[in-house]
Amino acid sequence: MMLLAAPGSLLAQGVPQGPEFRVNTYTTTGQVGAAVASRTLGNFVVVWRSQNQAGDDVGIFGQRYESFGGAPLGGEFHVNTYTTNQQRNPSVACDVLGDFFVVWHSLDQDGSGAGIFAQRYLGNGAPLGSEFQVNSYTGGDQAFPAVAADSNSAFVVVWASATQDGSLEGIFAQRYASAAHPLGGEFRVNTYTPGAQSYPAVASDSAGTFIVVWSSDQQDGSGLGIFAQRYSFTGTPLGGEFRVNSYTTSQQRFPSVTFSGSQFVVAWQSFGQDGDSEGVFAQRFYYTGKPMGGEFRVNSYTTSSQSNPKVASDLNGNLVVVWQSYTQDDPTDSGVFGQRFKSYTGAALGGEFQINTYTTGAQFFPAVASGDGDFLVVWTSYMQDGSSFGVFGQRYNMIYPVELTSFEVE
Image 1: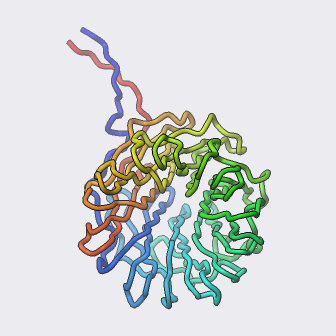
Image 2 (image 1 turned 90 degrees about the horizontal axis):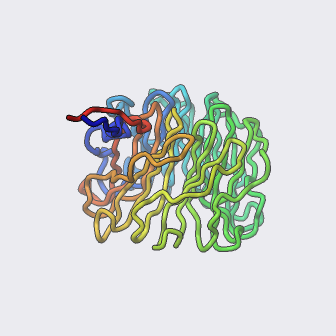
Image 3 (image 1 turned 120 degrees about the horizontal axis):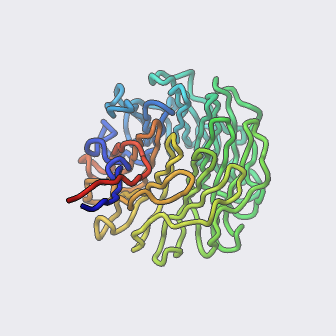
């Protein structure tokens, strides 16, 4: 008789909960660019942009889902009230009560190029007040917003603003109390202003501390690099801005950030670092902003391009990173893949895994959110819903650490 040890939670690391499903109900023309958020112990909400729906050239739509069963809660809903021209690039955050906050950029609504607009909702999907303008400065374009919420239902919105800091583009932010009252005025996040600072992301912890990350041109000495700035719950900077990436050759861009227990994690795509085109890399940090070890490669498959990463964490601090990978599931197109990591140690939980089941054409632009431990991945899929682009999703169960279980064999 031998005593063997094997992973006792192989299936519990995170397995699909049912088949992948279509998020958008309206399937005419294209539905793309989905974002997803979850309350701490409850439901998910997905938002995306849709073309020519409900009299809107390009507008923002959403769908709520029940957490445990994954059933839709009501029908899809139209987020933006102003429908002239185009509304694009939505982002969404949920507070602990399940109320949520959607932001997007809208062309010509603020009188000058793109501007940032927002709409608050109760957890039951009812709008709280009307949509409102976030940016105070309206010269040029304010675009590519992101939003995060804390446990006090306060929100922070970040975006890229052209020429406002005297450069091509800078990163700006606005804080809100739970009732959507502005907390102070909008403020510049980046200290370094030459060139362009773009594609911001933001995360907030339960105490209201938040961190903003972005891509900065030429600041690390070689193309784009990833930089960050930490803030207290009062909006006071905690130290100065700092570089996230250690590898500085060529381009590091499109960052994503999440708080994971008493640490935070930033993921991004890096050109040439994994030996072939784009790869996905990440860096863990202590709460103080000190790096935890070195940056590490997330993707195992390195042929061609792995890009557009998003990162989320569950209640236990375990991580999941998702991205799109070119040629991995289709020799001529992209698919969506993920990798889980253990809290605190950062050790990989199993291998990378394919998320999309439908592999014809392109599946790309993934996003991910985790609430009570279940996580939901959404992405854009080409021709799967019968008409151009559609939004699809896949639920997974809680991310558990792998523990060894002993058993006997004869």
